Length: 247
Image (tube, rainbow, N blue to C red):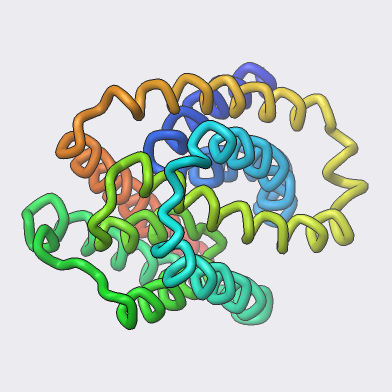
C-alpha cells in the first residue's frame, strides 16, 4: 500500500510542480513522514525532487528569464540555504504558522486582485529573492513562497515555472550532498520507495509540462494562487497541531 500511495502522490506532485514550480516536497514529505519521520522524509524526498526538477528544467530550459534569475534567483538560493541552516538550530512550529500566514496573505491578495498592479523592479527583486528564500528555508519548503514572489514579475507562465525550476536546481545541488552525508544509509535502506517516487514524479512532470502549455495565462495565475492558498492553510494547520501537541 505504501508503494501505491507513494506512486500516486508522486504522480500528482510531479504534475502540479510542472504547472506551478512547486508541489513535490509539499505533497510527498507529509506522506513519507508518517512512516520515516520528518527528518528522514525530507532527505528522501530530495531525491525525487531533484529528478523532477531536472526533468522539468530540460523541458522548459529555453523559457528561463535570465534577468529575473540573476536578480531574484541567486539571492533566493542563498537566502534559502541561510534559512535552512538557521532552521537546523531554531526549528519551531511557530515558523510554520508564520509561513502559512504569509502564503495565505499572498494568495488572497492575488485572488482579490490586490497584487495585479504590483511588479518588481531590480532593487525590489534582490530583496524579494532573499526574503522568499530565507523564509522558505526556515520551514524547509521554499517552492510555494518562491512562486508567490515570482508572480510579482511581469513574465509569462512558462518563464515563471522555468525560472523557479532553475532556482530550485541550485538549491537542490547545494543541499543534496548534505543529506547524503548525514542520511545516506537510512535513505537507501528502503530504495524501492525512492525508485517508486522518482518514477511517479517523472511521469507526472512530463504530463504537467504538456498541460502547462495549454493553460491560459489568467487561468494559470489563478491556479497558482489557489495552490499557494492550499499550501498556506496546510502549513497553518500543521504548525498549530504541532504547537498543541507540544503544549
